[in-house]
Image (tube, rainbow, N blue to C red; front, side):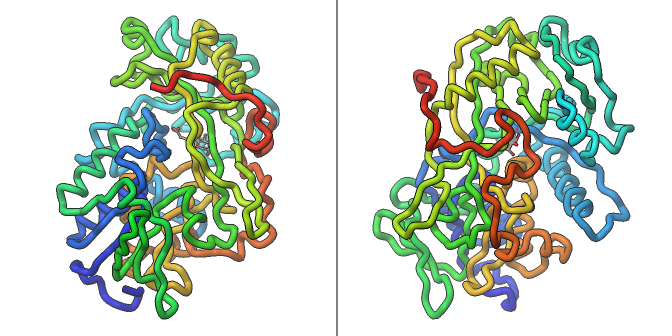
Length: 438
Ligand code: FSA
């Protein structure tokens, strides 16, 4: 079904990927009355390689500017506004949002310069300025933040931002989509090995069990795996980040309840322990890891892989973050670690558009490290593309844009900081943690 044909709610739609964006797209299409939707994924939900299969993710609500300008500020405000609406009013997602507030900070001159230039600190009314260790410690109950916060300065937003139980929200979207009639096929039968093309268009997919699935529209929502299915012309850079969990006691969980998110843009972040496993997740912030492999064609590609370990250098960074903030935890053993893949576009805007040549193929990729919080709304943008009615300003920002990847600098840190302040390569990692995987 191409852009010109009006939406027919009985037309067949295939979604490749049952991760954050695949489930959001299935939910939004099903709510619009589409009755013939099939989602394919190689893994049972929640997929072990989905970035959304996580105990928490940061959510920063935005206020909608009634007089948005045409440029990027409209896009960022519109994205924040619609995502926030979902977290605060959509019954599928509301139970998973915790409006605990959000502290964003840095500790080097360059980091502080970047921080104060960021849009979010322009709205001073929203943020209280913190620039002493006492001020940071006072943002949480006594006994939580006991560190010295060396050189830390930043802004504290007490409401309108916080965190979500990511896995819960992902599974809620999946179950609601399934309740509305969406078919999910997982395992070998859901493992898409290739797109099927005919007469210059995509007519469906082949799965690892040898089955052919035909559809009027095929949507790629496969995140960092997308380049394995389609030549993305350099528009996606699969990049991974690192996280670790610490098991907390029942008493600690009582103390570490309803904490604001603490995010130092050049050393790391944490959110309160999750209710299911009582584990505190800490991420060391850095420009990311790629996994550069020279493929048989001689091209250099960053190839994602699943691993429930992190490089020892990442462990060291996590423990340094803890020493500066919660030294009482800095030597505790990790109960879980993993690498978590995302895909960066050159400008870190999403890539949600019809393919310029394969008219029945829609791309829904390019989360660029800020995709999860939009699970409430991103499926609506994909549905708008399918129906040919995406807001022109979003259409411009999310367009298929290979021209932006010509001569791409794959080592571009893309406004991120931390660690060695460069994009790292898993091929160069000598030593990994050896955490007993549960
Ligand atoms: O709550 C979350 O785990 C959001 S992921 C945020 C992040 O790790 C960024 O900090 C990083 O810079 C990259 O964009 C991947 O996503």
